[in-house]
Image (tube, rainbow, N blue to C red; front, side, top):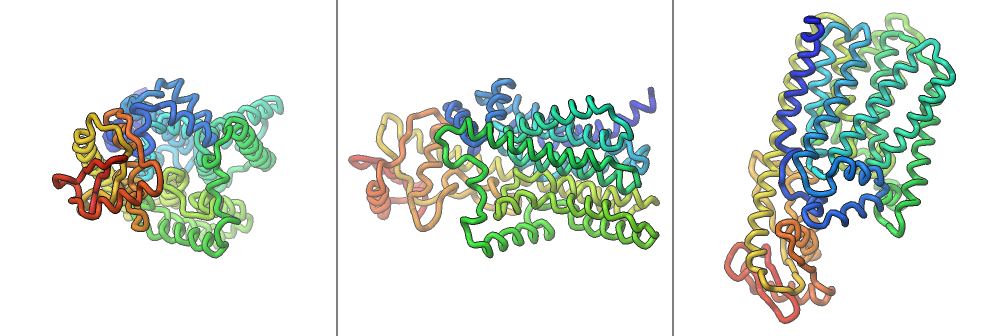
Length: 492
């Protein structure tokens, strides 16, 4: 009993560290894009999720009592579900001979759970409890599949029941968030690779059933989401696919751009030991080949599939994807180097130091993203406080001209959703009033007021002309009331 508690203390310590790093982000009350609607207009957000084919997400938000703004409950539930998923992987890895009675499962847990990519998920405070539950479902299904594949004999009735249940679970996870299918695939490929690298047999018939079952789950998701979308036009995943819409060469270029950024670890969203791990897995396969293992093609294929998993959504869309759709890079980046150490034997002191150093860097990168989000929120709320005070007792359409950015420092980072204020979310130089709609979303979230954007393109052009001789925020006179609208000048 004492030995078992000592064994459990190690993953518990890693889990506590994960919570310590992510808790300030996931429980923050910062006003963020996409979550801001929950402050005063939750039904708008719920309807949008259904139109996006995410009806299970809405169902879970209602189940968890998160149809109103509650960042603490949402964040804690996310960390709880993520932790349970991590422990499932930890327990599954400990079953293999090379991982048992070592620190390798905890080292994997450390690298996986501290990946900066989880911060990109944590940014969307409203959704993360349901996303965490989806991660738990996908991981649990993959772990169970790995167990079934390793069994020599399984009753046909039990196997049939499990495949039916697993197909339903996968369909449900897709209705939470479509990219969770990648989470399932990455976890399953990780456990299959462990079995192959230890020369454990696999039931190929069950592997074929898994592929067919995944296809059935995707088909079920498409049917359900299509039936519930109503007249929505932009929420479906198919709309995000660029193949056939953009030039083929341009799609290919963006895929190569994503692959290059991943290998070179460009910005925090790409940081992991993926590149090093890929090299180590090639070395491992070559060693096995030289040792006379002629029939290790399944190991190679599984390794290639896991290495390609981080680019699954990129290939599907023909475009650079958002970080929150990434559920495989953190898995592959943590697994490959640790698996190499587990299989190779010996002390592997240098590689252990590299892994620990990578974990420390991941913590620093996540802390930097949290600091960036806090500074961005300060910029947004400070401006919102001044603007809403000036707009009291006024009921006219608003025209925002220019852009208001967060002040950049060495401690801040601009990457995807991090670092962009509401006042620059849609802004571009060709349209000086492009910040109007996201700015109004911020003001509405800030005090619940009934703010309206400009009525027409002509009104926007007139507002931009009026702003030409106005001072910019925060100088006196940056807000001017005209006959039919109010002009707010953010920058020169």
